[in-house]
Image 1: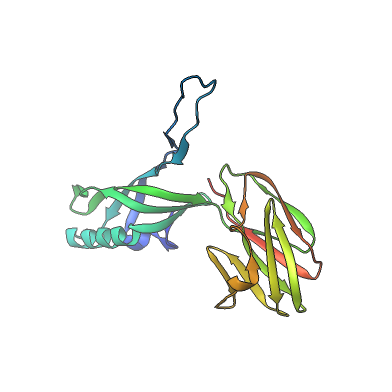
Image 2: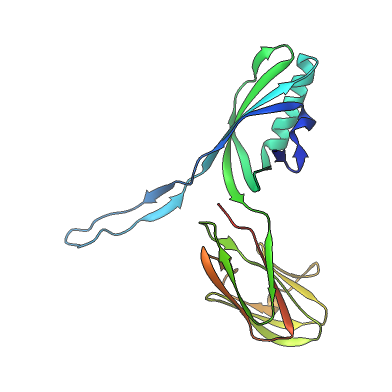
Length: 227
């Protein structure tokens, strides 16, 4: 079953998914070169290119006008959207579309090609107040989104994820501090002045080490494995 932004496809009178195919990751190699006299080539920067999601949907309706209205609503919904299929989320945006193909007055086929921005699983989480590990089975790194809390006031604690060390200061009792998605918050207010870190923590493929230097501080790590 495929959904779009948590909506069923039959909301748009799509009665069949004829094609839903995405290709695998590919990379451009930028700037590799070989200096005269060097024993090895100088490696270039490898940048990931957009993957493509190619789709075909069969629309049915009682009239041409009804079908075209549903196609218009579907295109508007899917210009930037998240498809869900086979336990994976596909975050996409429209690359191009073509005119609907008319099979008969009550059936049209719509072909749309999307750029794939991300493919990921449902969120997972682990909570610790000492040390633990997280194993990422997917081939791509993913962000670790943190929730840090304590039942008592804490002046300072250190959370470490692999080589990334995060110092969190002035934790209030029963306050939850959120670190992730480009933000540091306590409730709806910024907490960035009380957090020292060089970068937002990342989980890499394989085993990741998680540690907290205080047993009275709970850290929940939430993440989505990426494919």
